[in-house]
Structures are given as structure tokens and as C-alpha cells.
Length: 152
Length: 84
Image (cartoon, rainbow over all chains, first blue to last red; front, side, top):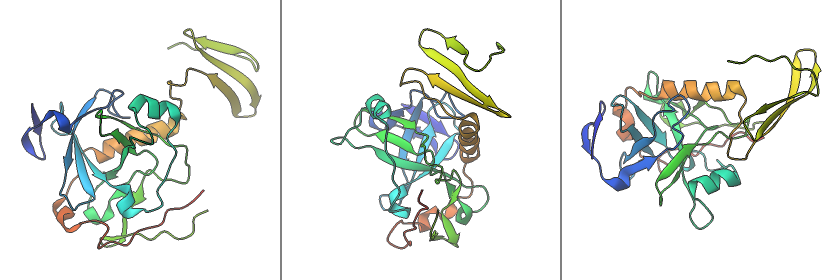
């Protein structure tokens, strides 16, 4: 199928690049299908492009490339709904927000995108972890990853 | 929209399987319990709104020209996260 994207132009997309988000995502409840676009094999970044709204592109970051102790428990209902298990673990991404400069980008640690790469469904899961910010700065010093000390 | 007045201990039933009970009221704080099927997600309104708003901010990322520089964990320091 063909997908129009303001960022990438017209894309010819294969079935296996499409992911269903049966509930949309918060703020975009009508957007139920996205194209997953890796940025580069070596890059921790990738993109989710809406199939219906050319302007709607999310930048995703691989959390484990930046935060090696990022962790959360997926509730049984969410695991069941997405069809994920120990044998079929999910892929996890963070939505990144870039307002002005790339160096100032933030990621949403509280609401990761959780994807089943086998049946191609996904959802943005809202965690019950108040210590995780929805606007966590990825780089504190230029484009070096931020070192966060201590915490509560 | 339906507006109802309830007292502590009273309930609202929504559909066949959602029950909201006013447990107690102390000053400005009202404690509610919600019984609902597990597939119904329940969030504090302000958290859901904040995430929806952040998604809208994130939806049209600008200035990604430098993204190619970021090849991931090899060059970058791995950051530690705050813990609960």
C-alpha cells in the first residue's frame, strides 16, 4: 500500500511494516494503523508514521540504548491483549519530543510504546511509575546521554 | 453529560459491569472505588491528559538533521534512571 508522509514523501509500504493500534494512542484515538520505519540499522531511533495523516510522524527511541535499567511490569491484561509472553517478548520504544534542537529532545518514560512484532499490534502503555517522567531529557551535555544520579 | 449528586457510601452503576462507589469525603478529597472489567483501563485524568498532550507535542518532530550523528549506545554514555 502507499502511505503519504510529509517527512518521507510517498512510501510504498509492505504489510509487515504495518502495526495495528486498536485503541489509537492518547491524543490520537482515531489513528489505528502506523508504519514502523527504522532510521538506520545502527541507530537507536526509528519512526512511526500514520497511514492516514501525512503530517503525523513520531520519532521513537530505543530505551535500552540510553537507559540500561529502564524496566516495568506489563500487566497480564495488556500482555494478553497484545499477545506477548516470555516466549514472545515485546519490543519497547519511547516517544521522543523534539521542540527546537535535537540536543534538547525529551522522551516519555512513563508511557512506552509496546509492540508485538509477531502479530503486529501495539499500544502506548501508561505505567504506574511516578518516578518516570513524561519529559525526560535524553542529552544533558550536547548530544551526550544524560547521567542521572541518585533519584529518590 | 449526566451530573449526579451522591453521598458517601452511595454508588453509580455504568452499564452492566462498572460500579463507582464514593467511599468517603474528607475536605477537598473524595475517595472513589471503581469496579470494572480488567480490560477497561482507568487512569487519573491529569496523567492521561498530560500524555495525550505530550503525544501532540511529539507528533511533528522538527530539525532531525543531526539524527544521523546519533548511532546509539556505542558512543553515548548509558544513563541511569531515578528509582522509586
